[in-house]
Image (cartoon, rainbow, N blue to C red; front, side, top):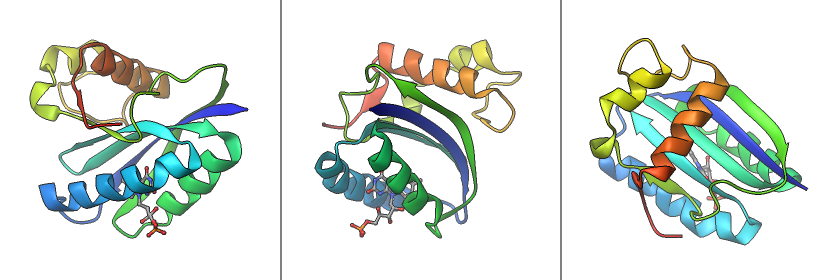
Length: 141
Ligand SMILES: Cc1cc2nc3c(=O)[nH]c(=O)nc-3n(C[C@H](O)[C@H](O)[C@H](O)COP(=O)(O)O)c2cc1C
């Protein structure tokens, strides 16, 4: 029983490269153990993350992440049962924002800024899928 979950949140403090790396390092250590894969995006104070895996594992992890004091306003954008993963290649991939084409943001939103609170969950998921297709994801499985 696989599910895909996507949420957005706001970082409580300016998240520098080191804080982001700490989150990714922890995710890469923990997620393979529980069979969760996904992608994390951070831009200008906003996190956007997709988690895929077993229903119980994803729900448990989501609740754990939602309680994390490093972010707030954790908002569930999308949740569905799935037949197959779309982000199977990463225990937790990171979107390379440097390679993010503003035109891609404009394709799905009113302005060229990442604002998942202002667009539908479907639009944010479509954006993630294009990022994966254009290889704008960094990080090892
Ligand atoms: C935006 C964000 C995303 C996170 N993503 C993950 C994740 O994918 N996997 C994970 O294990 N922890 C993730 N964490 C960290 C968890 O909230 C929590 O600190 C961690 O799972 C605790 O693991 P531990 O019990 O091994 O110390 C994330 C935290 C934040 C703020």
